[in-house]
Image (cartoon, rainbow over all chains, first blue to last red; front, side, top):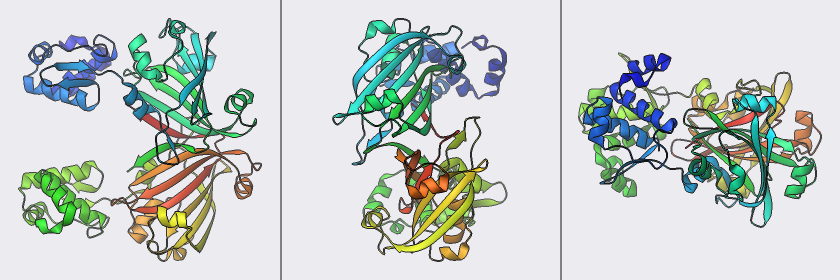
Length: 248
Length: 248
């Protein structure tokens, strides 16, 4: 990095950091803004060290930090690549369903519907949209022979320009967002509540209207912290739970 | 540590670890089994290094690891103490309620009931009880002028021998478990489902029977991984959500 890569307050913040942290942040920024896309091979270590003006040891410390965060993968003799989001990693990180037997539950698609629409003012705000066109993707998914979730996603058309051309969509959406649109989801916040089934959910999940459903209202974000997807998942939690491990 | 502190398979595992890890594990075991209780001051570093047969640098590395895990607190010039669970830490780690305005929700006690009982076979298994006497503690808590949670706890009498003498119980139970009974909760698993309100919950939370409630079924564990408490919390999630932050 020449220090001029960063500007404004970001620049001031970078200067205050230890050297290896500055190199780490500079490389993270390149991954975040797509200059180094998922799967890309990084320049070799001597070249990176030279480019950022740091010693080889400092550069390796920065790469080790990025590796520990799952952002890059280092293979002996094969260099360093920007990590791709695998199906497995996405399921592990972002799907928290377990059955009463202690097995992970990965529901399979039963149906999907996709429509282009204008975002509501609340959605414009939550997705920080400059342009209010969005996709509304609704999926019903099942497990062990019955429908267990109804998921309503809102996706900016600007980030997912030709989404309709990819139907039927794969079950694991986040790896697909990354491979098809270079939209990597690295964090999500779920706000969980209990909600009565509305008419659509009751029909989709074969329960009475008003039956209790677990609702996960999600905002999913990329490495820059920008909102990429809104999702409202309604789960029928008969024999299934959303598991959270807490520790001090 | 003399290496004879550890025995059996534990011993074999310890030998395979780097020296500082062995010192860390030996100190963690002393905290876990109460030889070093919460708030206790550890012997000074030269003495600890001598006792465990490691260099001062290695000992400091082990202490730094314990500090990073929140198990000990090091104050310059005042030595090292076993960390206590503060109200703040317990709330931060184990209470995940937020209101729609983005503020943390900490419900206040409205009522509590305590009774001694015989554990069900399922509870005997979940709590790994040698002796089936348990306390059943039921609390109703409120926020912003209304009842929002009904919590049913099951606590082994053997771990909490004179619980009835401490009533009314403090709002933040985990710091109290630690200070009054030396039972430190360091991890908990919540299985979240949506449940219809039963008669007791409907009355306590002023909703109709069958109204959707968020249920968090919890097993809380100590540093040794032993189950200390079962808890089934029913939340009225009107304007409140159980928040989960996920990341890759």
